[in-house]
Amino acid sequence: MNWFRSKSKPSAGREEGISLGREDNERVERWQRAVKRVRVSRNLLKLAWTAGPVTGIGLYGGYYIGYGRPPATDLLIYFTTFTILSGLLGLLAAIVYDTTYGTAKERAQQDVLEAVDLLGDLILAVRDLAMEGFEPEIRRREAATQLLQRVDLSPEAVAFACEELIGERELGRCLAKIDTFRRAGLYSRIRDLHQDQGEAFDKALSELHRVAPIAASVLRERYMGDAPKLQDGMPRDEFFLERVMAAIDQDNLLLMTPADVEAMLLLAFELINGREIPMLTFSYAGRWRLASVLDHLEEQRSRYRVARAAGSNRMRALATWLVEVEVLAYEEVPEGISASLLVDRVVAALDRLTQQLDAECDRLRRRRHTSTSELRRLGDTLATSLRLYRMAHDAYRELGRVHADLLRASEHWERLQALPGEERSHLHLGPGRKGLRIVEKVIALDEDAREAVCQHLVNYLHGEQLERRGRRFFTRQDGRRRALTLEGARQLAVETALALDPHIRLSRPEVQRGIGASRASYLGNLEPGMSAHEKRTLGEAMAQEVVQDMSQPAERLALALVRHYRVSLTEEAKQFLRDNYGAREQVLNMIAQSHAEEMPQMNLLSQRPTVVPTPRRDWYRSLVRARRLLD
Image 1 (cartoon, rainbow, N blue to C red):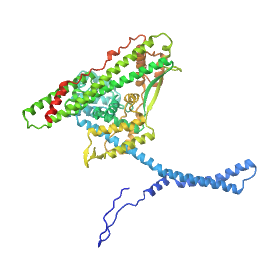
Image 2: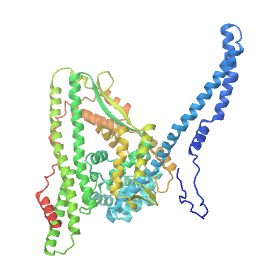
Image 3: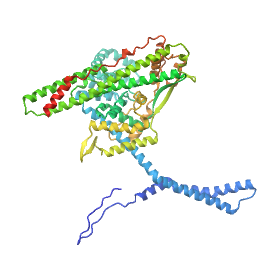
Image 4: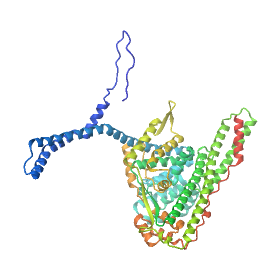
């Protein structure tokens, strides 16, 4: 209880001051709430009915049937008294239990509601915080892309977003007409507009694709008469969890992008509101030799996927950092460009940064009284960039070693497949006791895990003294209020991952792949100012709305089995995948055409990882030269 009391002592000759305070009745209130929840009056009525007529009729009838005579009065009194005392003791135990554990349960449910409330607002705040770091042109383009991904966007808003992206008012009006016809189901009129504006629209999209591939893809869907659906959810970055866990493992928050922070908070919001994310793996039941080699190859493939994601994610984190410090323009490294092009542009940016640092060193030598603030800023930026680049380079070197291990495991598997015998006949997909078995698992939080996660988050946010003022969040540091920064948001994402990991094992590669392959819940209707109950209702509704589409994971699994494991995709196997997971027949037929016996052996060397150059010595020389001038 919070107390507010005057602590001044009455002095001689003066009247004693009035002391204001609250009566310490917390324990009494807790007992009163427990009595109300247990409903003592109703339980006493049940007890009176059970101890009176029910006990008397039961005892009398049973005794008479068993012994042929009515029971004695003292026996009837004994059973009635026993029933009353047992019922009162049970009622008292229920009240005591509710007083102790019921209060904790009530507090846990309040923490769940508070966590949902804070996470909903933090998702919006982090999204806006990431936008603030962009230049106005990029900010306009990113905002328009998010608008086009909304389900309930009006035709006028579609036209506005199109104009924001490509700067063509006429094409924006055309897109608004397409959306209007889509709502009416008049797709023939949409085809007419395609004939009139197709050439101009293709030209505008090709120009947009060079600087914003994702925005161009979203705009093309609108142009084709398609719109986002609640059931489809929102796309999720496949490797965002790997970057978050890498930031934890290596104690470097810069390995995480602002988009990863939003994705991490969104995942927690989904799971707390009851989202269940399915994932598919497979196991083999049959001869031990084939099973051991199969498990080893799958382990190497898993390591290769994780290592490949680690390398590209480190380079993406460096590119995001360079954009944040305005060394690199966002147009040069948009989402969706190839890894090799990303490496080339990052290296070129580090060269430019080194040249700027050298030029600043020369100016400082010529003018000894020049301020060193700019030199210090450039030096710190280059030092951080080199540290991130070294991490990316080491990750790609590790990828090369894992790639070599995968080659050896694949060659061993192919030698085993080439041996005569009956082993190959056991490697099949479908019904039967032996063969490949698809293992279905669900990533979700039960009630106890949900409460534990929310208590963890709420305690952390209270410890950071996070408070909401209007549309923004602030933290208190050294007694001063400071606005929430990207660094603070990254730390919050790390804490969210630490809260979830004991319950769903985020560090496991198969869990990361399962979550990365799923679609996120659509939260376009999440708005600032919504109450906690509204956010929870929205989160639960959207979690149930997303269709658990297992067709694409099943198709990817079938493709991996055919390409990497030489599995024969028979008609029975295709029917099994269609009936159980909704896999598309056309896709399965295309996969089946690449049968292991007819298909040339896949050369994994053709998929060698991107080469990341060794950090250049002139980068380090410039940094050493700048540090000497600053000392």
